[in-house]
Image 1 (cartoon, rainbow, N blue to C red):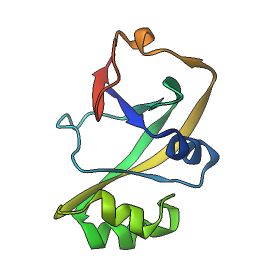
Image 2: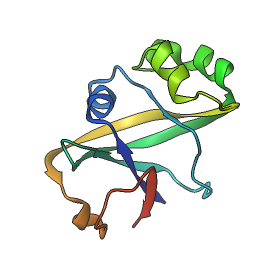
Image 3: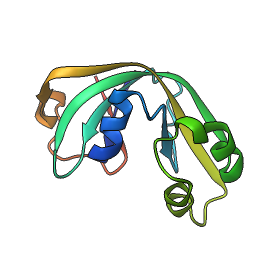
Length: 123
């Protein structure tokens, strides 16, 4: 199973240069068979730029997830805490085997007309 995630371009770039090894989410997909994430770099890029395999998904309270991921979070603690403000739980997708596409793709290549707010299941 594959999902397409909308990710801010600056963070998408960090995923593919190896400095960001965790993608943080307030909620996660219900389908536990998801193994591959296709990366849609949101505005202003607005293109699918690559993919990665999910190593694991961490789920715990916000402080514990930060302690486990801070070294390779690719974001500051302040940004992290702002993102998870008023949340008790945090999810961190551990990234493995990144693949940057030689040529960026469009959402329509995945039968999507608009970018998902968070994620979309794709075939």
